[in-house]
Amino acid sequence: MMPTIKLELLNRQDEVRTEEYNDSQTTHVHLMEREEEGFTYLACQRVEYAEGDRFRVTMEKPDSYIVVQMDETLNPSLIYVKGTTWEYEIPLVYKRAYPENAFAGSKHYVTARYATENEISQYCNLALNPHDQKQDSGAFPHAHANVETRNDPTFFARNAIDGVYANYSHGSYPYQSWGINQQPDAELTLDFGRKVQLDRLGLVLRGDFPHDSWWKEVTVAFSDGSEEQLHPAKIRSIQYFDISPRTVEWLVLKRLIKGDETPFPALTQIEAYGRNV
Image (tube, rainbow, N blue to C red):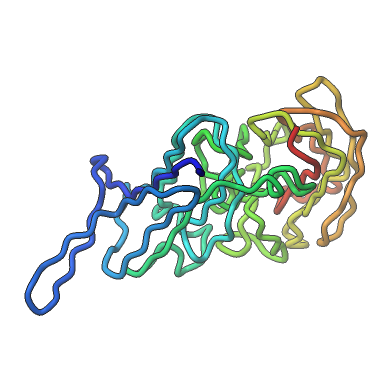
């Protein structure tokens, strides 16, 4: 018997939202919540999201790996949740960093399920999380930074792990990135939330040249106290760096050295390859 998993759509007042519809004789009210074994979903044809709405996923026990898809425009995310609940605030105020049709309209289908053992143990990009949010939601991986340009969602740290690699321009979707507001002490932290073993990193630098600069040197500090120095080139394609295998819980990109005097270097994506420990 698989453990249960529950999915709810809540409003700003922490109430479960409802879908109302009529047939020839009756008005029906459907609560936007569902609890099932192993896999659950919500589906509707007459619910428009409002500011403050959020999804809540509830698991039977903490330290769960789940696969979620909160909108059809987002790729599914394999995330690790420390607690027994995870909440996803529908990012209506951050729409510039998402497709135009994300979370739009009245017809929706969202899913949540437990990850399989194969998914949990596979070698993969452990940084990827299209469902990361600006604030720490207790789900990992999670990216955050000591600076984000103008507090603009198109420059949030979360953009660097959303799986969107477009880097020929900057600004709104699909060219969102992590922007450092011209600060030389900018740092980005990638928190895995648990121990993982890493042996390879990938960087996609934003390449809106000549508007953009790039980093010719990047220091990566790991939770075990070790560091690596990476030396990216001024190219738009992904750049891979093999590193000594190590078991860590987080890493930090810091001491970002620009390759020229143009004031706008930025990061489109970071990848971190390895396995869960």
